[in-house]
Amino acid sequence: MTETPRVELTPAAADLLRRLRAVHGPLMFHQSGGCCDGSAPMCYPQGEFRTGSSDILLADLRVEGVEEDISFWISRSQYERWSHTRLVVDVVEGRGSGFSLEAPEGVRFLIRSHLVGA
Image (cartoon, rainbow, N blue to C red; front, side, top):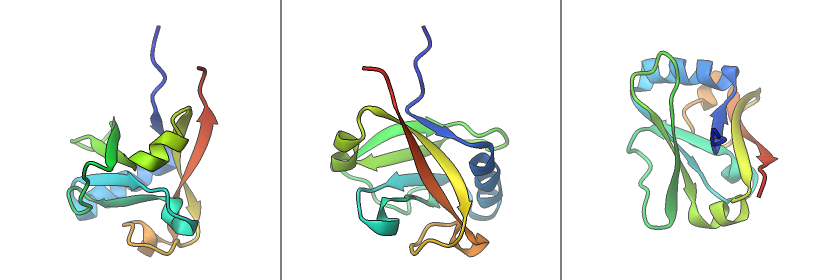
């Protein structure tokens, strides 16, 4: 039986990550539990966002054309609320208000979630 991945990427998200990787080098995500855009997945150069004991490494994402995995971190409190969901990282038009690398591109990453079987 194959385990369902906890985090997946849409083709549009993978394409954007390839472009961001070419400009910024290795990447990482952090999903916080903040309000408004603070609840969007934020993409940073790898290691630029400091993770700690209040964060959980949820997945190492493989993207075709990107040499290294892209780590996907989530705050422990958000993980507890979303522990029964599969997260799908997508891209939509519009700028978020944050420091995520895609902001100058006129798009933003967005999480679509699906319940997983218990």
